[in-house]
Image (cartoon, rainbow, N blue to C red):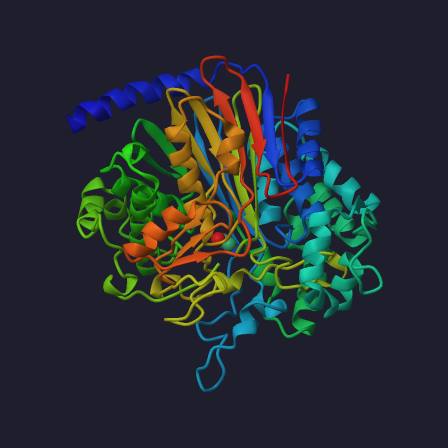
Length: 558
Ligand code: GLY
């Protein structure tokens, strides 16, 4: 039976991929900022494909959403090429500098120095986004890198109006931004949060984007920009060397792919934990008919699946170039059966009763965008500088705001990161290693069509994407806006609590969950900023939707 189902799926999947070569009725983009969506649309209208548009959107976000991602950060681009059905993940994740050591964030007594992995240049890993953009343009694009970077260069040099989200985040990170003159000059006005619609001009960043446009990756990783960044980092106590930049490389990785109840899911591979954690949780949930259950019972099972999958995230996952992970085992339905065997339908499991695993962290930061062009090329990209405004350190006159992605490593064997995630040996710091991530750009293919989705939000990214997939599966008529708007809840093994968005679930449901032993914590704020595109297989029509929690925009046009 299992084999027959596999065969049927293969037939369906081959047919689906063949269908992807048929031109669509239109193109669609959803991103976290209207100016970035507009940049991508302009590039598609100039004859670019989805990969060129991804360069334009990512670079524009680096300018207009400097708190979420940027040239000083990293990320994952999940691609589907219509021509031959190729699916690949561009791993542009940051790497630890070569002088990094496992104990670099501890004092002589072995105590962890919590701020050291979060603020200032010592917190910054070697950026991957510029190399990712150059690779996308060169290997997959139709336009030149310079053409696709042009909208971002304009936004940096001519400025963009400070929007409400920018101002709110500058306000909540004012002390961090005031700490360094370069950061204050770039993001504040007279050391204060810019007035509404005041123009944020980033002339230095514009020059760096021009260097990238003119010379490709070496415009960033070698030459004057690299020299300036390394000098600024070293002068402020950081450990970057020119060789760290010169030797940075993106990696093309095979995405994680698996099936769940008639859907084929393609998602981020390690060093993201996203795809594997999603696969394990969904394989556990496959045993239950979730749509037939009452809300509290459904939430209970989803939480128990997440608890077990995040537990394995902490135990096993890390950079595949450094650690070997039991991939086949984690992906196998039989392993999911083993994990599910300990689920009690009437009681919450205590995370403490699962095997002990060391801790790590991640936040509600980062950015995501989804794109499809008329040829059916697709991009799901999740990009980050880690926490809002990253390390708060602008590398001198390069105008590049550096990430604090080093905090995504297991800074201490049993410590937690900024997201409260526990990490362990597989994610210990090593020179040149990539920190484990939760970014989960994902494609979902089924008989109805193809969903392109993802979200920012640190450790909550994986549960958001999982809920997005479950919502999609339960919709009889696909409603993309409802999907990105749906209320969210989250569990990540440790801390052992079920976090729910405020004003989102009936008190009676939460009471029921508490009665069976869940520690329910209603979060102060809603989280995430999901950006989704859906292609209706029957009509070839593409739709886009942007999460109402953010200020982004989804557009679809003919
Ligand atoms: N820094 C967030 C993540 O990579 O998951």
